[in-house]
Length: 218
Figure 1 (tube, rainbow, N blue to C red):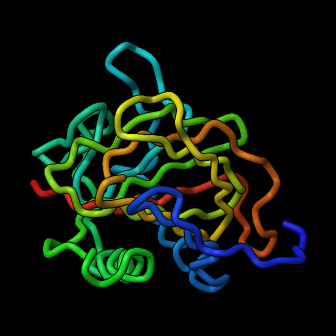
Figure 2 (cartoon, rainbow, N blue to C red):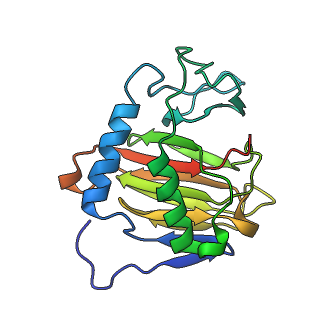
């Protein structure tokens, strides 16, 4: 993106939902991208997610710690809707990253007692979208941590009652952090649009990666 006259400032989009622009500097973005590329390789690598109705999600996904498929976690911890391989482990440094993110965005009291143990990593090309949904398959109400790499997207953050209005559209760029917990933990949210070609050139990523960190409570 072109340089701007004013720096983007952190914002509370809804109670318990905070956007922190450029939370990851360029070096941390490159390191996280390198890890995502390793995780995306088979076995248990990047896959197309199929819904119970026979459709497919346009964003492709890889899971760490627990394997998610619409709409549950596989207790066998294998890719039950893919190659059947064991899901890749969730590294301890991602738990530390998530806790740092929650503390920064919501304060130290918001950090959960249980460790973060799930990562859902979604890859969006220019045509990919994500419909309005809630992250409600976990047994924990710990805050969700979302990190963005690559292309800018429109992130639509709604309410807990309905998939429709009221909602707020937030521009998420590479390196941005979005945390939602407390009264916003089960708010509907989605990605109606990705802006192709907006990733930082030095990052070396065509498309968008979203790394979502959660506590399973399982």
